[in-house]
Image 1 (cartoon, rainbow, N blue to C red):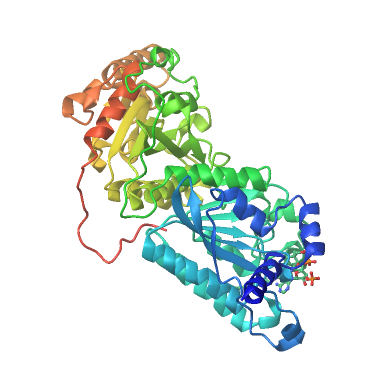
Image 2: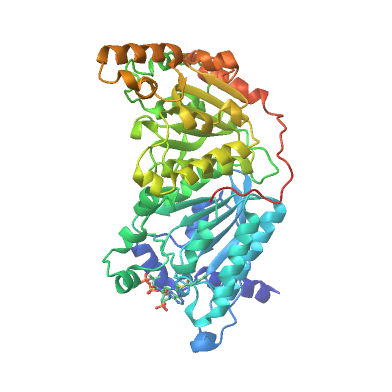
Length: 510
Ligand code: HXC
């Protein structure tokens, strides 16, 4: 009997060694953790339960029958993050470069099925040379099986991808279909084709880092939601994110103990808006002053900086924040900002996370590059996303809410539940100067008259009261009271029930 138990231990030890000590050392020398070390960092201590440790591939081509590693290059299972269940897979680059075989894919699909059934997030730690070349179409089929599961899981359980090594070809499309992608700087890459193919086809010479490194995807392409310094930081940030999210679409977001006063008055907010209405101020300051303990988990912070998206807690409950940022492009909505915010709003709505919208927007960014790039369709994404969202929606207009952008940013007309404005709000079709130059075109050239008309327009519209008279603004609130008012509003909406007409699915302008 003792022999049998020892055999199991020996088999386990062999599986835990992955591709062997030499390759583990090579992994470490690149500044990367191994697949198992990553799991240890990500999960609560001792909580990991492994599946399929002894699964082996079935390939007999190209001498593969002699190259079998228990587990077949991916570690799968479940565990907890701060006591809450998650499923995960972690690709082991030391085994055949973490390449995806038919059986490797089947292991991933198995835990995804379990995650959907049991209602817990799926976290994928990706470090793989792509489809296992020796397996050919069997590996391609494996990828497609994973893609299909990603689609079925979308909107049912949160899916988070961490890119911690190469990720090329079809390997990028599974992460691309998940809710969040985190990358590690200088050791992770995502591209459809690598630098060599790029050079052959387009003659462009580009490094892997420039083409598909973490900085590129976090700041230029928006494929990644965050770029982190090393494996440890990326994994700790995943823990922080998971803490904010519900486990599935049937659950409310978690409520955590908080150490902040629910009646906190922020006098400094009364002077946040500069006297000059065109001067910028940092919207981060408002977000942090509203949030419990000033904690803001920002999503896509390096992309489309004219809009902020991310999660805060209010009285312990998760709230998604979308906020125009007057420091960048004066807070205008453009293609990138609309896409970024639309996707975030849809995530929140899919997972019952209430949305707080902070508005200071002078309109959509004009110009040929925006029009040729399809700003109409991309702007419509955000409009559509807010319009279809049934979660609690609280909006605060701090300053400008001009034109179509006023409508888009969770206005009353898009079923905003609480629409507040600060006394500094200006809700109008456009800025006073632009408006005057159109409706008093005949006076152009007469500076005194134009100045008088502009003043007249400002007096009439550069305030929140015209909108408040119509009930488009529920109340004009003191800036210093915003945290209290917003938290009370969300508390009153905890049992909100609203549903859209039955449909197979909508047809959001993609
Ligand atoms: C089988 C692979 C492999 C793969 C790497 N290895 N990629 N084995 N299939 N796809 C093996 C290597 O042979 C090597 O084995 C070990 O993994 C480590 O690889 P190295 O090349 O030594 O590592 P490194 O120098 O760090 O380079 C990593 C790499 C490179 C950039 C990922 O290995 C690479 O370019 N691999 C091929 C990538 C690729 O073209 N994949 C197919 C993509 S197409 P030993 O035994 O020496 O340790 C695709 C289509 C899917 O994925 C479409 C789905 C729709």
